[in-house]
Length: 221
Image (cartoon, rainbow, N blue to C red):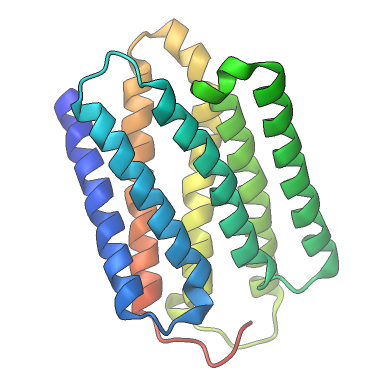
C-alpha cells in the first residue's frame, strides 16, 4: 500500500505540473485565471506533502498540517470566485457568499477554541468544505442545463472544470465524515481513503488539462 501511495502521489504531482504547464502555455486564457492559481496552490501543497512523506515521519509534522489547513481557505476562495463570476442568478450568488462566511466562521471557531486542531488533520472540516463547494457547483450546472444557449458541453471549459470540481469534492464528503469511524473499525483503512482521494485529485487535474485544451470562449457565460 505504501508503494501504491507513493506512485499515486507522484502521478498527482506530475498531473499538477502538466496542468500548470498548460496554464502557462495558454496564459491568455483569462477565463481560467482562478484555476491557474488553484493549480499553483495545489501543486505547492502536493510538493510539501511529498517532501514530508519521503522524510519518513511516523506522523505528519505540525507545520505540514498547518500549511494544508491554511491552503483550504485559499482553495475555497479561488473556487468560489471562479463560480461566482459565472453564476448569474442573484439568489445563488447570495448563497455562495453565505457559504463562504459560514466556512470561515467554522474554521475560525474550531481553530480558536481547539488550538491544536490548527496543527492537526481535522477531516470533518474538509468534509464541510467539500459540501460547501459541491452545492455551488450544482448551482452552476443547473444554470447551464436550464440555459437557452446552445453550448457544446464537451468543449466548454467552464463546464468541464466545474464537473471536475463536483466529482472531486463530492467524493471527498463521505470519505472525510466517515474518516474516524472507518479508522477505528479498520485501522489502516485511512491509507486506502488517502490513496482514493489522490486518485480523484488526479482526475480533477485531468479535467483542468481538458479545459485548457478547449477553445477559449468568445465571452463569459
